[in-house]
Amino acid sequence: MEVTKLIVLPAVLALFVLFLHFIKRIIKLRKLNLPKGTLGFPFVGESFEFLKANLEGKQIRFIQERMKKYDSKVFKTSLFGENIAVFCGPAGNKFLFSNENKNVQVWWPSSVKKLLRLSLVNKVGDEAKVTRRLLMSFLNPETLRNYLPNMDRIAQHHINTHWKGKEQVVVYPIIQLYTFELACCLFLSMEDPIDVSNLSSYFEEFLKGIIGFSINFPGTRFHKAMKAADEIRKEIKMIMKKRKVDLDEKKASPTQDLLSHLLATPDTSGRFLNEVEIIDNILLLLFAGHDTSRSVLSLVMKYLGNLPQVYEQVLKEQLEISQGKEAGELLQWEDIQKMKYSWNVASEVLRLSPPVGGAFRDAIKDFTYADYNIPSGWKLHWNTHTTHMDPTLFSNPEKFDASRFEGEGPTPYSYVPFGGGPRMCLGQEFARLEILVFMHNIVKRFKWDLVNPDEKFKYDPMLEPENGLPIQLQPSQYTW
Ligand code: HEM
Image (cartoon, rainbow, N blue to C red):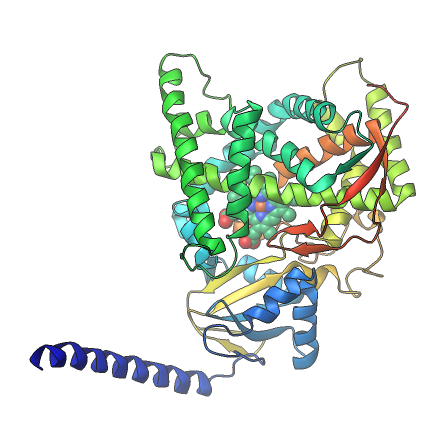
């Protein structure tokens, strides 16, 4: 009896305190002028509607319906157990991008936090600044230009191995081999196809569990992703162990790849990242660095397949570049600068179909935005679609028109596939190079027709084609 009392009484008390806390919070929220919208059922909120719209490739629908219903560019919702205010339009983007460390800080759902542990995405404030600078010293254009010929070599080898001689290919899984091979080579000097393919299969599991409920129970997507992350970490750790010895014995170069760079370079405070930080950051960059580009390149293949005039213009630009080079000479930095039209095409693809739908911030204090109160602890979401598909910012937003990016291009804070501000994507230049190198090689070698020109793309969590995007290939007459 006494024992029961000892257990039950504290439990009842704890529940009572929790209940009081809940009531206090509701009273506080009621007094505030919160953005319009609904928080839905406790914990699940509107998560299922959000996930359903994503799976149908209609993330925009979830946002637009609510913007219309509440007649506002900011509305509230609840996703994955969090109260969220969605900030729409250039003003919302500008506010969130320019208030980092003032009113807001970067925030990711707990599935991302748990999977990416000590990496940059879980750092805020000065710590994030220092880590970003260190990673950027590898990902900036000055460093990456040295790796460009290697990127070209990998693209050519990939096309010779997986595309040449085929009448039909399924684009999405094949392009993953290119973007993943490239990331493995530049980050870890890993080139053995079997090693690359083994690691790649873990990333498939990892990706499927990264956005969603972080329920670590056998059979859930998140559980599989955690297991896959452990395997990836083991592999990186093994490579790192050997690399340390090779660096000591001068058998490896401190500039040969990202791993060597992180082992040999201190951050701006003079500190070297510890082993776990190096592993987690490489895991982050391997993940962020190949799935996004794979999605964009699959979409580039879709749009070029459906728009013969655009394909012809890209081909013309790329042939002019090849004609100015010796046979067999690899792409150089100057060649990339000439690929203006091709990059406008890729940019238009990124506008119409951004692989990352947006990102989150955490309100680190109470503040007001557009006359609404945003309580500290709420999460804020900016979404690429709210500006990319706004007819007042992009006329005929549904139409593919690469010329939008000529001259001054879109107005500030309206074109945001890579985000903005101090937490903007670190891999923008890396992505630009790998996309352009691939476009250069593929248009010179092939023309193609989509098996299903209307094949849909859905977010899961990255934009991916429903059936992998099969295409019919016709080899081109140009032989470089
Ligand atoms: C076309 C391809 C890509 C797109 C569309 C893209 C998009 C994005 C977006 C929207 C964010 C969130 C920004 C924010 O919170 O404001 C982000 C963050 C990030 N991206 Fe990318 N990304 C791409 C490729 C890459 C590549 C190739 C890498 C690495 C090599 C990379 C590394 C990162 C990292 C490390 C972050 C987190 C930055 C931070 O928290 O400070 N991304 N990316």
